[in-house]
Image (cartoon, rainbow, N blue to C red; front, side):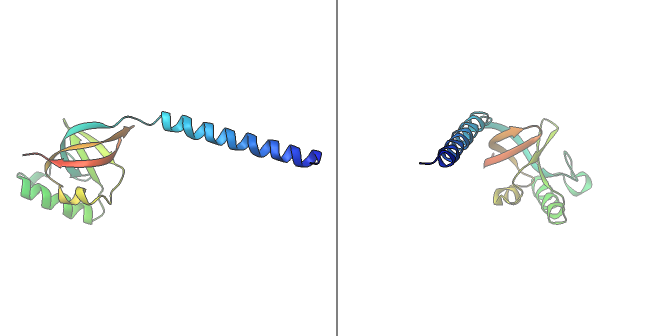
Length: 120
């Protein structure tokens, strides 16, 4: 093997090892899943749907209408509003306005939701 080929092979191996180490380190930095209890709302209404809400059916209809109008779904727990990463998750529309338990990971003020469970 020529000197240049050996150098190229060494560089390729070093890059591969470095990439694998970086990927493993990133996976180790993933936040652990947590559970929260609260309500799925929309960013425009937030904690309260005002005159358009007041019960579970009205809250649901208001949140869905706002989301379809361009407002993002959010999660409200103890009057704190969290953004939701995956806005296309079907459970968001299904449980909008409902009291739910969500499972997911939190990074800054955004929750990546993995599960939504309707509460009684």
